[in-house]
Amino acid sequence: MITLTDSAAVKVKELLEAEGAADMALRVAVRPGGCSGYSYEMFFDSDITAEDEQAVYGEAVKVVVDPASAQLLLGATLDYKDGLNQAGFNITNPNATRSCGCGQSFS
Image 1 (tube, rainbow, N blue to C red):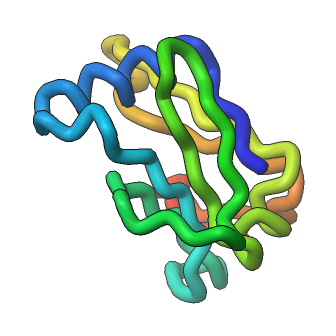
Image 2: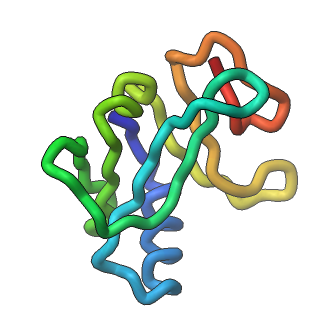
C-alpha cells in the first residue's frame, strides 16, 4: 500500500474540499503503458470495492488501491511539493527498477 506524506495528505484534502467531494477517496493505481512499461494514475473515486486496500492519512483522507496495483506500490510514497524547482505530486517507488524522464512511468 502506498503511503502519503503529511504535505500530500493536506493537498489531497484541499483538492477534495475544492471539488465538494470530501466523502470521496483518492484512488492510486498502476496501469500498463507509458514509456517505461507502467504508469501511475490518481483520481477521486467513490466506487470502492471490498477487494480494495484502504488507508486513512492526515485529517480523514482516504486512499484506496486495487489489489494488482497494491503489489506494485508496496513501500511507495506519495509526496507533494510546492516550490520553484519542483511542484506537484511525486511518487517514490522502491519497486521501480527504472523510470522515464517525466517521472510518470516506470518498470
